[in-house]
Length: 155
Image (cartoon, rainbow, N blue to C red):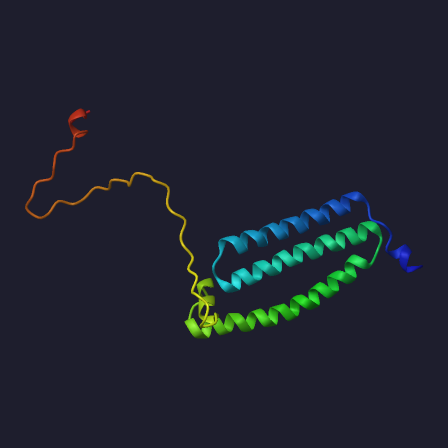
């Protein structure tokens, strides 16, 4: 059996399933990057995005009956392993300097000549603050409740 016979073009549903899995992995990684501030979770989310792209490349490669996408995935995974080692060094360096894994820890790794950048929170929507009941000070009678006069004492 020739190598091309073993690696024949795949049907369309197999391509669609592969692309769907790749899109789901990429989307989960993107949500993790955008919503988390923990350096390790952000790093794992980036790796998840990379795996989603790799699954999509393999699906397209199998659909077209070509080894090119799979060879590219092997190179991508080898580069990702090197990137993981370098990123782990940065994460450990930030943790040893600050003692926390918040993404704001990267501020301590900047050069001394660069200005410090600070994340600002998104301003809250103008909404009325809720009114919570308060206890009266000792020895003072509480104010009568306006709604209590509308209710009957006995049912």
